[in-house]
Length: 179
Image (cartoon, rainbow, N blue to C red; front, top):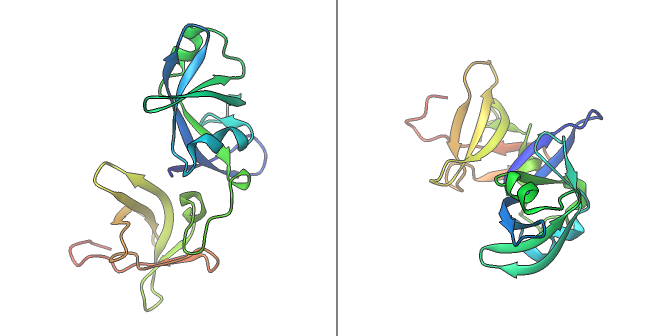
């Protein structure tokens, strides 16, 4: 799942991107929703969903499965034009509303801010984001000494250990990376 910490003026809450609006569905204001969750039909149970900037909040009611997702009613959206205007909008749920991950699983939101260390304990930096540019997930981290972000492939070979409880990941950067 993609992630993005979003603040709503209160202390920062972690939010997880759980869906995106793919456009309008029908003529009565329903939207087509593409779900990014393990159980797509559970998305309506995660409480209100927020836009990335938390400027808008929606309650969502799935109405039926459709090709590539679900048709849904969004609170405050009553026309096809309103639903179509939201096309491309990513929807975020509070991390606390999601089920706990299984053992050896985690949400990408849980990785933000973790230390990136080598096996010998050398601090490389802190995780800034987890990105997917199309060729697989990468960890973007801010170096401990400042400067430009670095990217590491998020594979078991390069990041063999994820220790959320310990606040760190162990990384073995490829030799060609300039860490």
